[in-house]
Length: 217
Image (cartoon, rainbow, N blue to C red; front, side, top):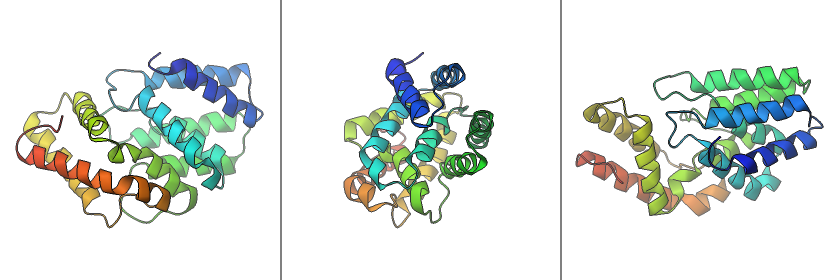
C-alpha cells in the first residue's frame, strides 16, 4: 500500500475516534485512501507527502480553529491525482464531501474541507484562517533542505514523464517563477519564519538549472 501505510492508517483511525466515527466503514475508507495515494504514476504526490503533511499539521495543530477539518482536507487533497488532469482538486474535494456526508458529519464540516482542498490549487490571492495553514503545510516541501528539495524536483519530473523536456522545462519554470514572484510564499508567520528563506533559495537554484537546460537534481 505504499510507504508509511500502517502509520497512516493509525492516524486515520485516531481521527475517526476523535470524530466518533471509528466504524468498519471508516476503516475501509482509510484503506481506500492509502491505496489511492499509492497509485502509479505518483512519485511525489504519494503516501510520503501525505505523511509529511500530517507531521507538519501536528506541529501547528494548536494554531488551528478546526484541526479536524484541516486534517480531513490534507487526507483528501491529493486523493485523486493524475498529472495530466486539471481537475484533481475538484474531484478529490467531491470525494471528500460524498464520504463526509455519508458519515453524517454535517454539511458545514464537509464544505470547510472542500474549500481547503480547492485552496491547494495554489492560486495567487489572500487566504484567511485555517485555509492558510493547510496551504502552507502543502507547500512546506519548498522550504526543506537542499537535498530534500532536489529529490522533490526529481520526483515531480518522474510524475510528468510523458511531457517532453522543452515543454516541461518551460512549464515547471513558470510554476517556480510564480512562487518566487509572490511577496510571500508562506502566509502564516510560523511557516514564513521557518521556511521562506530556504524556499526562495531552493526555487532560485531550481529555476537557474532549468534555464540552463537541466533538472535541479
